[in-house]
Length: 296
Ligand code: NAP
Image 1 (cartoon, rainbow, N blue to C red):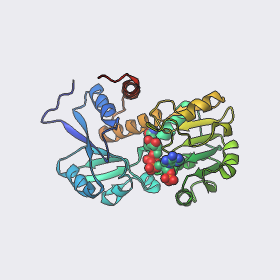
Image 2: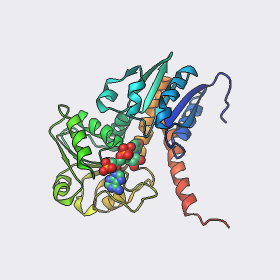
Image 3: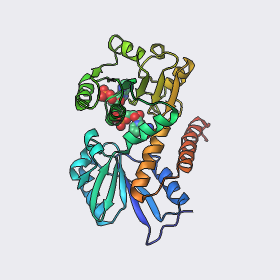
Image 4: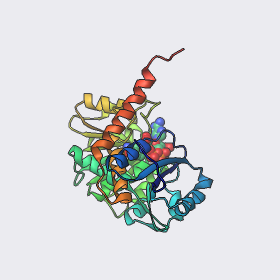
């Protein structure tokens, strides 16, 4: 059982909103499993409150923090230093406080790559299509490009945003194509891809019925990764699996970005089995609660 003492170190989650985040459960389980005297707390911080919250991390001696939507890009200008990989991506999801000096990191990209490689896919020399151009898509695009993919397409509902991400990747990867989600543009790209990543919110609870593209465009043997982790198997992954694709859920990225952040704060290897189990149970419980008949 968690014992908060006068000596207990603090780690924060800053976002808006934060109440649905699974990170407090995952990180507190990790601190407990490794016997660390640390506690992880979530704070709903509005955009205008962000500078004061960061000053508060310093003033109160927090060990570090996670940063989530909508602050991952805005936080950069308030930090004392930024890791080069996070600077290239243009987004920070983890902060370490070294004696009042805040350094920003991006563990979304490394977490995505670790989960992809663990599943058995190496992006080097492969063609990838990323659906979406928001914060998560940025991390995924830089991860895949940095791992040496042979071709990259960024497809987004809003073409302009896809174009900005493609431009940011210039020099890091082979030419990047930006397009919309329309069949005429996207289908040929999907059909020749080795890896298709959904980095849009389509399919995320409560929009479980939504898919970012029709499964009919997918072929057996392709890899399909859905960043959405709630539900654990999205409609896209279910349909892709039925067509013979190899599928990966967003749980691995969530787990490994958290594991990398844990190591940055503590200098220790993260207890990934414990953390993964906590996440899986929390997601399954939330589904069981939704499908249970309501009382009264
Ligand atoms: P974001 O910055 O708000 O971007 C959302 C993206 O989804 C944009 O590209 C947006 O297109 C697109 N989109 C939204 N609704 C859509 C729809 N109905 N049809 C097609 N495209 C749609 O959000 P984010 O932070 O990148 O997160 C994106 C997803 O990744 C979320 O589901 C999030 O839960 C998940 N995620 C997972 C992890 C993990 O660890 N597994 C980590 C981060 C994020 P427009 O630009 O046209 O609006």
